[in-house]
Image (cartoon, rainbow, N blue to C red):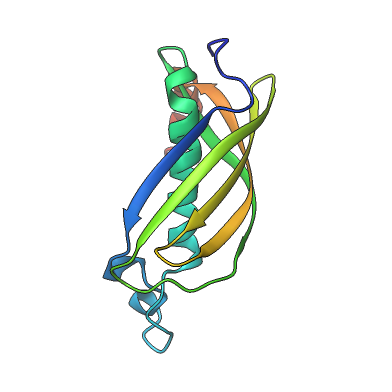
Length: 131
């Protein structure tokens, strides 16, 4: 992890909402709006992109926890803009605030924790779980 990984760095991701992102894609009787899991994925990607340039070769960051609220619906075709800002670096744990807006309003906000891990070691631990 580079010394440049400090509170205040930020990342942004834009995502156009497509049919596969809708609640109704998996649950046909539900409204055709962006699902919370899809939204969280976009927000997590913004956090990852904030951190990624500050990692050493062979390192990645993985999600450890989320606390977020999704309080406005977004229709298919609209674009979500997710932003993430690092608020604390505590050893290998990174704390992030993130939010998402569609073309009309703030639709979600929350907090996220990521961990910096050595990718090779991570893959070795994961291989032990393969049967």
